Amino acid sequence: MNNIEIGDYMDTITLSYVMAASNIIVAIVMYYTWYSNKNIEGVFYWFIAWVFTVIAFSSALFKPWIGNYSVPINNTLAYVGVLCILEGVIRYKKISVSKDRKQVFIGVILYFLVVSFINKDNPSNRYIFNDLIAASLFIAITITLLVNNNKKSMKLYIVPACASLGYVIAFVFRFISSINGTILGSSGTHASIILIYFIGIIWSFSWGLSILMILQNTYSEKMMKMAHYDNMTDLLNRRSFDKHLEEKINTFNPQRDVYYLTLIDLDQFKKINDDFGHAVGDEVIVETANRLKNHVGEDIVYRIGGDEFAVFSKKNHEKQIRKIFSAPYYLDKMKLDVKGSIGTSQLKRTRIEPKDLYKLADENMYNDKTNNRLWV
Image (cartoon, rainbow, N blue to C red):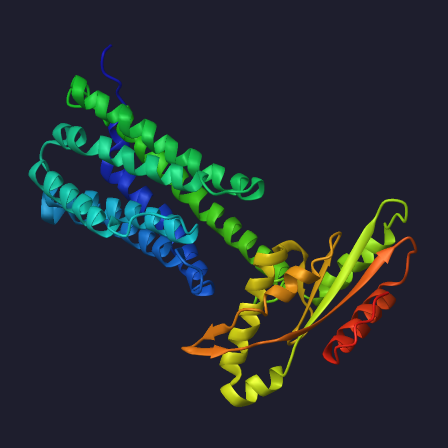
């Protein structure tokens, strides 16, 4: 038998109702997900995607009155939903893609609208013209899901990526069946069409579940970052500094280890705030942090107070740190000569308490303010 046949009870209208019902559930989940995460890029597009998808498959309800005009409505809105999902992934993962994609997306939508309208009474032709492009969209979604991931996030994206690949296979299957003419010869609903609807249901629920898990992971990472990083500068904070200092001293080996703790305090920072405002003061803090990161490395620099920074390393970076104050700060169309006091203590041969190492560096920093260097 050349044709793959499914019973008449599995007609496309019934399948559309099932698809609409499943997508309504996901759309509700997406709404509350977006409502709770309005500040996260991309989530709004995922919610809108499922709104379009629900409307697309609900159009079958109106087929008794509008006939096959429901076809271009279904096809166009369904693919608008797919494009919204793709846009959401691009924005959420901050993937660098041409800003001209808006014009490309509009062109794709118009293509589906015109082709679906012209071939509303000829499903085989409609599948031939539409399905490879539809498969390409799901390949694009799969690629965007799988790029720029760490090991943990890859596990979260693999499920919707596999579901998207399932759609690719189903669309290619239907395209080949249309080329061979087996769809028109089928007495029931063709297997390729059944496959697309079932994958659509699986895809919707897998996306809904995966997005909840992805956003939960994002929230956890955000909370972890807030606990260990300074929000203004993205440097490690005082909590991380105290923890790392204690860990290194506890594992200190006098035979092989040497550590340097350098403290930096901006001079007359209060005067900068008073004269130019706190906004400029914040810019000075951020610029100082950026200069420290560029000169000594991000992973060993800490912001431990309002205008206080620390560098803890196996190398003495004091000379490099002094260079950051050699060039003026250009902020908000103004030029500022910002200076800082610097003090370094050394951990070598003898283990001492973290507070004592800090105190020695602080004393050197204080003496630096009066040009009276004191080395440990």
